[in-house]
Length: 552
Image 1 (cartoon, rainbow, N blue to C red):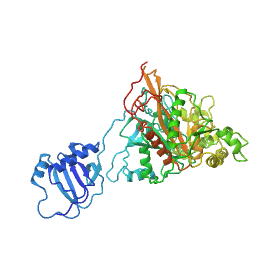
Image 2: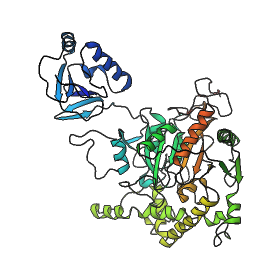
Image 3: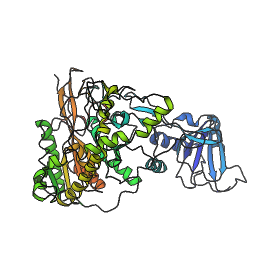
Image 4: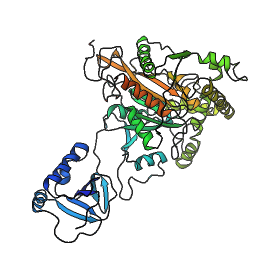
């Protein structure tokens, strides 16, 4: 009898599971198999005892089995009691451990089915006979790499049409928008990647959600759903195979419930090195702080003090506008910073955000002999609204903004970016930025029909976009409010944002994780109603269930 290889399989007619990383494993007794099955049941949320009933146990071997029967009598009795057979298979099987289906001559991973209660997904992903997944026209190179590293893609989440900011109740037309489980379950959405945020906030079986971020498509959902998010350094990851939105601003975005999950993505992509240096400065821009709500501002200051304590530095308050006036580029600083940047990101965002779809719009018209449908909200973004008759408008906002203005905006970004990196956001610096609402944002509230990104670029939402900086969003507290939906006291997520120098993504994530751990603050966001257990402290949170929400 030859010695089996390091992987063993067991199967059931149309079901298979692998037993991997067991060096020279030979099942010589029922206890060996039972121990393996218990291990699977403990580690794998898909495996169950049905996989060993009326099945096969397949042991890959390095050469053909010969000689005496290698199966002991007591093991035969065990197998017979489960109507299961033992099969030795010559050759190595390069498949990961876990439950499988057998379909024809192929092994297919068995995936658990979950109900999408929050309507986060637009479609699921299922296995195909010939390939790991159904053939698509193109899969992004980054997602391909994650699959190679062992990631399981469970589906594609809902997003706003044309990467706009469509939110309920009146802006989402083609399908019902995802639900936000936070608070009373009827809180609103924001940003285009609403399904990505909803899935992370609702389901503990979803570890990360991916998207692109041009002007808040990832960072803003992180705010609404109270989860961790990162807008990566521009061009840090390949966007090959990704539908563009605003090419000059597009970058990968990741949502998760822990910073460690995001770090795992960077590690899988080979983006984490062994070197790590603590930032030595914290910049607090008075152009954007303090926030109007006292409770929200206080929670952000609590985090700021915790950050100072971990880094052993005090924050530095500066006015970006004043720094610009004193030391900006000679040919630009005569214009106040808020005026200089007013349309720098706005023009490219709307010009490219419209014209990137030119080929699709014209192709749709040719193929179907009719205009492509756009919701009233997206029509208002694309059209110069006149008398609210969208279809009769001839001047589109994307066209109303000229290419010259678009190019001018990008040129202004190219002038501002090296200045901010050399004078303020140097490699040893991290900067705080404010984001988010302090309380209720009801799903059924009809807002401004043309609401979208800020009309001025000099804002926290556009800031990391126009300089290509990494931006991390982290929940730091929860603010109670009386809900008109539930009639109870509910909690709104309170977040803070950190940005750093280009390429400082991992530094931001490590600083964030270390700060939370250093002060024994919760480092994992919960799924469901609240982002943290309620606690009787300034930030209304606790590591473990310890307090109850106050009653109305």
